[in-house]
Image 1 (tube, rainbow, N blue to C red):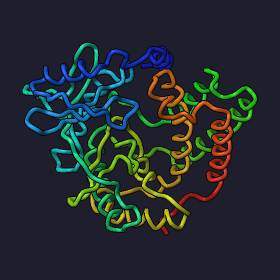
Image 2 (tube, rainbow, N blue to C red):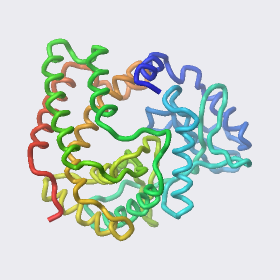
Image 3 (cartoon, one colour):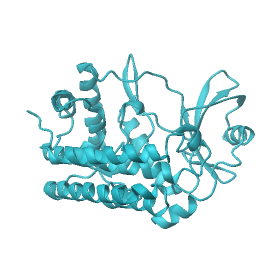
Length: 336
């Protein structure tokens, strides 16, 4: 799907007729018997619900945002999750029906069903948690290296940077008095990002979780498990590692070394990819603003993100981009 096609689709109001009755009917027709209990979970890109069953158990139902993904892109997400689960890598994979299909359809909606899993956020200041996460991510990337996604996105500067900037400017989200400075700051930042990618050159492209922040990792007594592969993409290994790092350069170096103690047990990390770390952070900053802008017509977004699309937000964002440009001028993180 082209950017223009996506933008056109995003002008419609999604989920307008996704009523509780429709949700329960959709699940009932899969063979499960719902009790009528329905709890909306904290998700905005998709609509995700905890659904009670007559036998006292629960399911999680994810209704995909209309127009964002095709059947084949969702199926690649599901197949990756099932492949990881088959290798006993702790991910929450979709449930299959009696014919083996995981992607379901009902009245124009695509949806999937998952087992309910609980847990808490990982303690990233605990070295054992970091080592454990490193081992699991090393195993995940070992599987992810077997082949690339054929239909899902590949992380690149055009899609996650240039297209993101163009959208918020062309659609008038940035206030006119800030638009020149915002455009200029983005151009400087993207030039630096381009330079860092050129320095690294061709890197090993893997199937990745893609959105591996602590909120997508649940910890139990049995260790971590990963949720929400909705943003799985092709890209460099560092994309799944950098969001687990925080603090000063020394803090991040210590955290990364511990992560890699576990990671390198199962998959070899290329230290040259550290040059991309701050560039990936920059692309995420740009992409996040565009994501909110592209979804602003969805009533759930103004309610959940009331601070977005205000002059104060764009002033703060401009300062953040300038600070990120300064970080890109500093030497990259090293392992020693």
